[in-house]
Image (cartoon, rainbow, N blue to C red; front, side):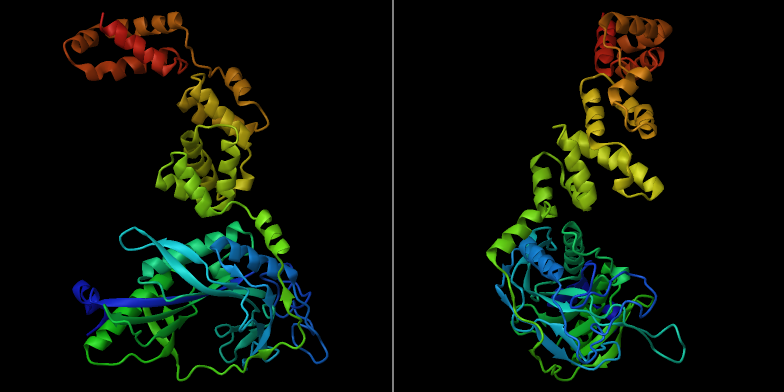
Length: 489
């Protein structure tokens, strides 16, 4: 049976069991245990020193910024933060691991427990429980596709600080895994501990996948998929492997414990190596690093330094009356959310503020592929625009059109002053409005008769003429009311 031959009915008999390990590369200025820089894209092997290369006689020094990042992430996911943190050497030989071991945390991870919330197949909230978060250092990078005859080693990345995040096997679909990764990326960006760019290796993940018949408690044989380069490929690799396992079992075969990679061009996994027994890394305590003690005072200081988190802002915006779609878009990016927060410091019209963010402001950013920090109009001025519309002084069309354009050219100006200068202040004087209404109706006497005969849809024609005669300055609500009253005479 081929993978794509697995029917929905057959798949429904099985339950995928999936766990994910994420390595988050932190955006510290220096490496985990040395003062070497961590700039991405530097020339190969230019960000190393005897310390990061593990030369004899050198000693590591702990980077406190890595600790702060770990505490913030632990607080964000509701984890228990360990007081006494010890370090270990994880011993294995690989060409891009210059010391022959990796400094990590073995039995004393800084964080235990915690969770990330996703939605299950029915759209209900589901907790993905975390096992642990621990601090460690990265290895170098091996490139196999630059030289046709040799593997090239770049040790710039060796020693860069990482947080490894390990989940319980709580995922039951590729879609849940995709949501989890998206949320984790958003979280590390909100906390400003990593840029979370998967294409630059700042966020890397390995996925463990098995299946079992529904109702069976025992886990099936798992495979590990490594070197995944996008969230969508994580989802695709899970879906492919789940179908492969089911097809294999239904054909009477057995799943072999293996380490795989995903070929995105073919949409299939392929073998990296067979996995026999678990690796014996010969962990032992790192003799050159003292335990790091995390006191409650430091935890509270880190808590106070944290920005509002996406789930908190989402709940806040829903409570303020925004729909789920708008709240999700606003919290997708920390910078967008904080700009929106700045707007609503000056206005309580939350829906209008969201419309401005998702409408004119987003269009301006998209047209220029710009970041919100490049947007020239201050948040307080956007709130002023909202008030001008709410007070009936400027039409929504004029505010989003000519006035918005004028503010982009002169962002330090007052919105009200520019509206006056551009002659955009709406006319709400009943006498002036009635003059335009009378002129509009006089222009179409036959249409007035048709309206009185029952063709009520002609109101739009008269309103269009009123707006034309007033050059857009007529207050639409008042003008509409006067048109109705005049037609009913």
